[in-house]
Amino acid sequence: METISTMFWLPHCSTCQKADAFLKEKGATISQYVDVKTQQVNPEIIAKLAEGVGGVDKLFSKRALKYRAMGLHERELSDTEMLELMHQEYTFIKRPVIVTQSGKTLAGFSKKQYEALLSE
Image (cartoon, rainbow, N blue to C red; front, top):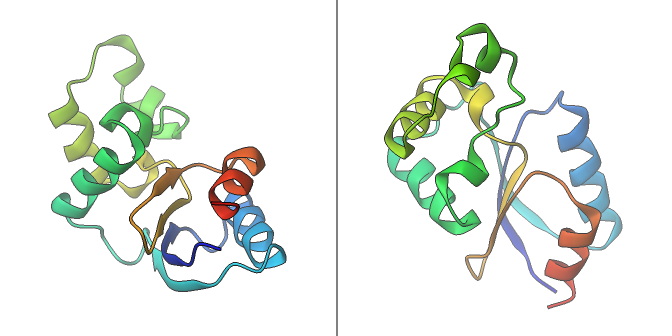
């Protein structure tokens, strides 16, 4: 079973809480939690997470309230712009993001993806 080395999350986010509970129910160990609101994630780590999940667009949350409020839905964002937005404003990081000790990275919560990850 994979050990989760880091979970990037918001403690009060219901999706993050569900993911945490699911992982613990399945017997997974989470070594470190990073609250993306109180612990700003540096640009290098954001870029590495984006690479791990398969691209900047897969880490960037278009569901953030600020996405529409800032008019971002009306234009095409470059990877560089999305990375900068995620660094400046934690709400643009899709949550939770988990990184396993072997380096596998998932963004968002999907029981199916988590089960597949834990069964490896």
